[in-house]
Image 1 (cartoon, rainbow, N blue to C red):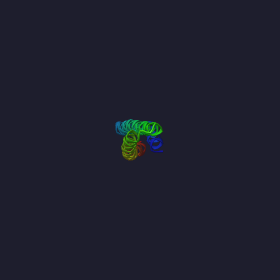
Image 2: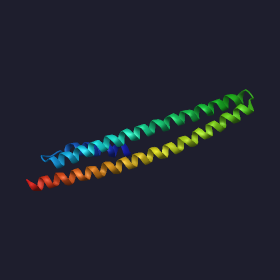
Image 3: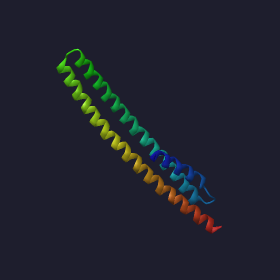
Image 4: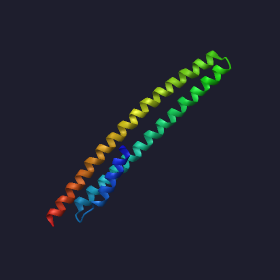
Length: 124
């Protein structure tokens, strides 16, 4: 959902490029902030996915060890799965925070672009 807002703001900012340098610069700034926010969110999401995969792999190892009667191995793998799951949950929260901050930054930049475009429209 946050990414949708970021991309919408980027499109809005790109369409607001009016005749003045101020409004063009504001639109470019908004587009740059939207791209940076999307890139940061994508990177954070990829990290979260990798950690979730590690948790799943460790959980599978625990199941296999338990099936073969390796209680110590199952316990160790379960602990690894728990740790990886906790890291994944923390990473997911960081991803959400990154997206939220990116959306906020993009909205502020888009608002500045709108204001600059309005000033241009009133000045002509």
